[in-house]
Image (cartoon, rainbow, N blue to C red; front, top):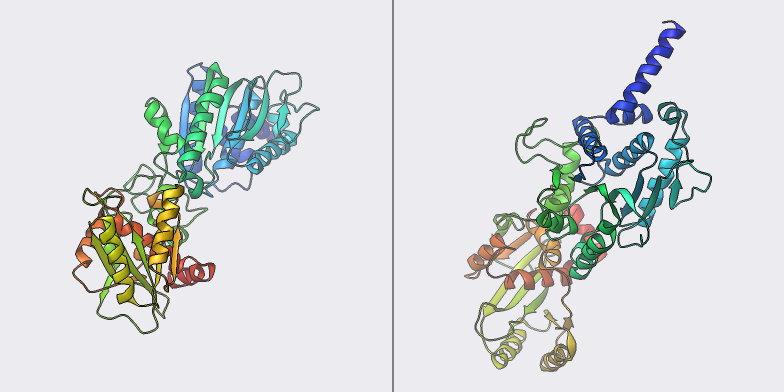
Length: 463
């Protein structure tokens, strides 16, 4: 092949990179792992770009599992757009300052490469570039990275990018954090948009009520492309049960992750389904029924106290044990609707029957009234191992660990008349009428099984 032929091929490749974002990605990243997911995501983003330059105010949400190359995809896209339109003002936000700085530095490295300069010779970094701001030399455009809920006052944008607005399940489970993030999105971020600006969000889902969940309800016109890690039905490029990006995350790897994760975490984080259908959170058919509690089982009884007698809520005393082999056992469930004096008497009688070897855990409501109640019950149960603690976080978050071990068969249950009511409640959680047994069961599980050494043991059992 002659030198002129090589030059011609190089010129053709460069021309294709200007036209095609997917070709640009491959040219800039020669070691990029390729697959249909990478190709289709690039085409989706190119359609977004074409809509953006046409002044159509596009809004696109891409939902995909973690560690599938989402952030790199977005950074490459920003670089490609900057090559075409260095006058565009882009603000990139994420839950972490570290992620924003990483995106910034990767952009600077990309702009400095000979390959990028050949494709887009007119896009150059200004002399004042730093870890938070890249201005384009001789142009009006810039790239600014900040955090979700960070300050962007006084700045406008033509392209707004959000790369994972929620840090993790703890933040997603906080109503306060979700409200604050939503207020930032609507009152701060979206008010920075130019008239024909575009919004691009790429994330893994954590919660039905996360910012993206609210945004899709508020604006049904937003285009949302959702990619579960494992297909739940036949799709254009894969069959049911096949992985999203097998070149990077194999089916074997994903199934191993699924085995160890709680149902709610797997369904939201990997499958982009934060709303769980009935029976998907707990799989009570995995609970074996046994006829005796092994000697040496360590036990706790956790109480969930109804606010009043009658109504829909129940007072539940959930007795749970850790057997010598490390598995859990549901030993007893008391469930009744009684007044405060009767509840106190039942708690005392139950403690006497259980014996002092069984620890007791109860909820402490917020405020002085909750503290007073906890002090009274502690005094009532003097001589026993008693702990009253505030109950915080969403029910599904608190029940994650319990559900994960039920669903892999690490929980058994003593044969008793209360088996059926518990199984029915577990099967319908979190959408059922009652959840008192699950609440108290989760508290008992977390109290007995929540230490770091125990969690490591659970991981080994699940292999």
